[in-house]
Amino acid sequence: MAEIKGILQDLNPWWGGKFEIEFQDRDLYEQIQKFIPLRQIIAFTGLRRVGKTTLMLKIAEDFTKEFDAKRIIYFSFDEFREIELRELIRKYEELLENDFRKGKYLLLLDEIQKLTDWENKLKGIYDAFGKNVKIIISGSESLFIKKKSKETLAGRIFEFKIETLSFKEFLSFKKFDFKNVNLREKELKFLFNKFTLTQGFPELVEIEEKEIIRKYIRENVIERVLYRDIQKVFKIKDASKVESLFNLFLEEPGQLADVSELANELGISRQTVSNYLNCLEKSFLNG
Image (cartoon, rainbow, N blue to C red; front, side, top):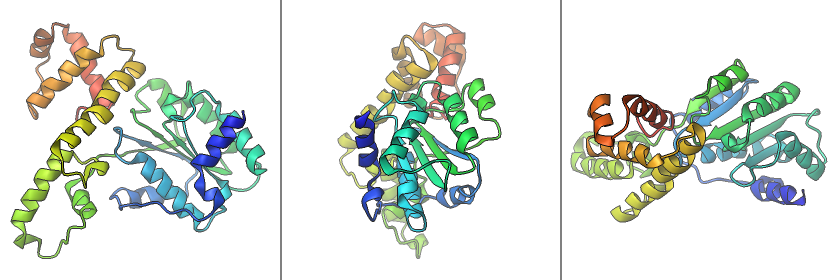
């Protein structure tokens, strides 16, 4: 698979020289750093577009400062879903003439939930190379919703849920001066309205057009979760009903859900409503 070697080279620019990523500090990053020296796998979960990949690349950048950059391997299963983990490692070893059984490595696996039976495959890599390899994974769905996932990786993994920006983080992204904040009530109200509109998605911080913001959230987040992630993970046949349920919450945010009323309005059973609510929660679109 010469194609895999090409993808690996494209995804790992630090192999060719100095690497820097534009990064705004996140409150969680300091906490994550405390877990990096431990043997266990680190998992980033959360909604699409909240910055999981950026965090992974920031860790890669930090490692390049005191670590052999050619021993840092990033791979996204968005790019190539069919390869097996062991085959990926073998292709890397051939490409850079390294051996995972010798020396230390950092392995970053993005969108791993797209790999079939990823839990067992990851466990196999961890058990085989865990003393030599620090593994960090990410997923746009709640990776551990299945009992099987939790059981397979029990004791081997720490999960961090990556949220959208807090208002404080949003202000930091906007280079807000926190001095004399009590005297800047009007500016804060304006920025809070902007923050509410963007819903805390990092890529929207500098976007001013409301139409662009709404289109971004609808197409890049909501529709992809409803019509791709949820359908795949929960095997739901009619995602339009899940979308209708989600839209009801958008119309009346903060309202307590009455399962019977929702079932009547959507024309589905109470059990189905409960199942759909669980899907939304596990996919980070509800709560």
